[in-house]
Image 1 (cartoon, helix red, strand yellow):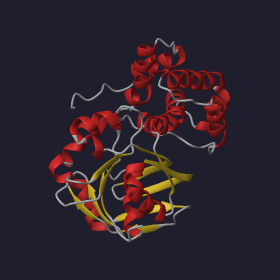
Image 2 (tube, rainbow, N blue to C red):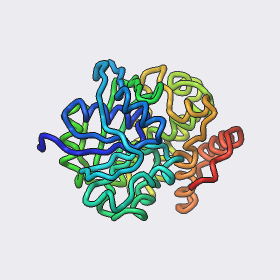
Image 3 (spheres, rainbow, N blue to C red):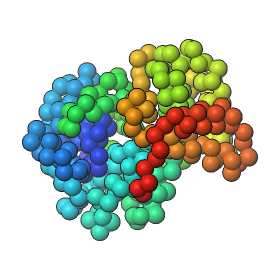
Image 4 (tube, helix red, strand yellow):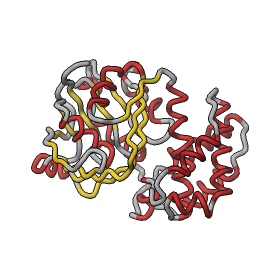
Length: 299
């Protein structure tokens, strides 16, 4: 395992800020890529983390508005709604031989990035965690779990992530890896957002919808050759802290643009292509869309 690697983190929000701080604390070189105001705040005060699992600490990191130095890997941790604009901060020429590791919600972002960068440079990965950016440079990690799955091409990166205390697995089944997270997160995000309620509420008062959603997601996954066990997904949802909220639910409460297309639209498109009926998913997506802010016209 290398003693040190060079990383960039595109989007120092809840996930990206935590990763940047943990990697910097472990001795890796880290540069955060963000807009000028966020970059200035982090340059002045570092990244402050509040976490029962990792402790409370502040880590100094470098900042930039665009990647201009060689790195071993760039973690892409922006929202799916921001991806098109955000990747302008990582010019393909600047990435060089580095890897691009997206930790976004949904299924479509990997293909999107492979259209803009060398296909082999983009390594699929997922993260299961609950974090929030309280202010620029202030990250609160609120879940007991913090787990990352990453493709085999990034095995050396996985070692550095593991050294921070994160739970890390290296996998070579990219499609299954993405679906394993998606089939848990998306139903929960859709229901918590639709109900404007936490996990504890929706898994009891909206149990029928939850079970139907999980079955629909499993049916579509099967069409892509991925076996999803609904019982295991329901068991995970039943085990998460009662007060857990999803990021899409919090975005709705704050009046921000939602990752509705990434979390709901992606399933509807795949279901239509496969001829699979997903009435509960469709109803929730349509009703959430009807009361949500119009999407930005930027790409």
